[in-house]
Length: 159
Image 1 (tube, helix red, strand yellow):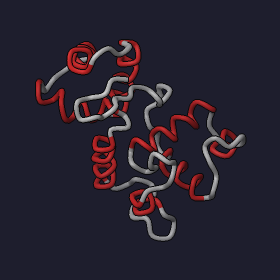
Image 2 (cartoon, rainbow, N blue to C red; image 1 turned 30 degrees about the vertical axis):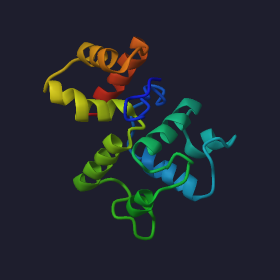
Image 3 (cartoon, helix red, strand yellow; image 1 turned 135 degrees about the vertical axis):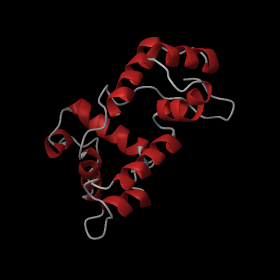
């Protein structure tokens, strides 16, 4: 990982090639709210997904600002998902999706979103996987092209 001039670390991968799926954020929120941890031995059974998907759920929760870097739920998480008064527990309102998208870009945990929406789009409106990879290599140093390509594939599957 290279460090940008503003000390931001770029992260590519961590999602095990899974785009965020419907209800993963709510499922992860409820799991953490119940006092459990993604590293628990029974997390696969409790969440009803494979081991790689458990890691992906944790990754996406951090990426969307639902979990902080210490693995704690954020105020945003409670605002959206709390059972008693969450504003959109099942992500049915487009406004909530826009709010989450804003946090996805702002958090920078999944670097590709910030790079594409804040930097690459300043250079060009339309782009491809190859253009994205060349942009990263030219501006941010040496990264594994396969990792960049896999991250781009997940990016496109999110939309």
